[in-house]
Image (cartoon, rainbow, N blue to C red; front, side, top):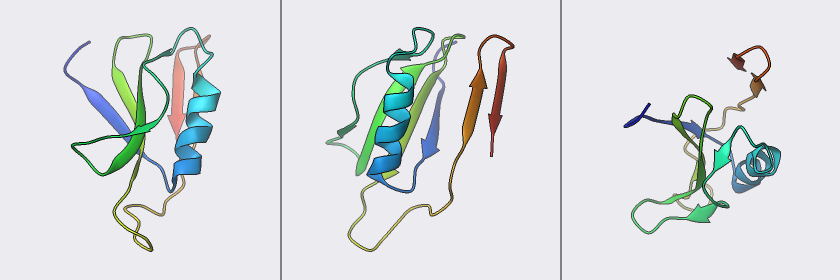
Length: 88
């Protein structure tokens, strides 16, 4: 797969960091580096590739104090042994 990036909006930087910690040592998830701020966009994020080659991103919009892009919580369950992904 190529040309596709699926982004997950996190409620804060801590949630991005938590997702990174959970995925960074998983060999099946090719993490492309630690979370960082990006020059072109007001986001704090990191990217990784799933076993099918899709690029995924966990991010938090950095749009100003007291403002948030999304307040929803995100839970992702990935079971690589059974090729199952669930999000809520």
